[in-house]
Image (cartoon, rainbow, N blue to C red):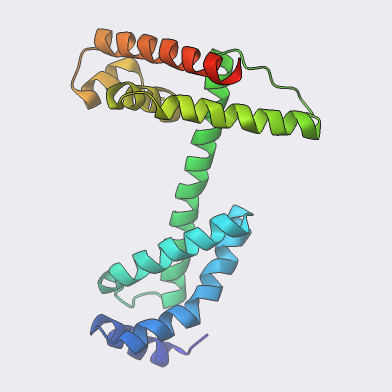
Length: 186
């Protein structure tokens, strides 16, 4: 890592739009960000994407860095927040898959055989495919209900319709997804 004075000069040059300084900042801090991201996310591919997100965020918000804390402390914060967001999305996606599997009575075993895992993965892909085939309003209702776990009343407020309409949309979405899954899997 660089010393505090070198870092301050590098940040100043980046703020001025110096492309070489931006490149140096990325080259210097990318390994640091990646190591932290991979240790939190435990997935090299996801950590690589998170690293890119952190670098974009860092460069776009460099003006908000005031120098009151070490730059690496600020980077830790940006990296942790980015990784936390990815973990939340990962957990929400897993919950959605779990809820939708239960909804459509897709059976899961405790310790699936590798062959069963492949079948399960294929089932997940079919389920996501069924969701993506829904029209926008139905897909939004499904995602808000099962992915974000919003109550029906709140979904209605977000989408600007009544709670009754949301119930109807979810029912329609369930029927369309069930039919789509039966075509795909049956």
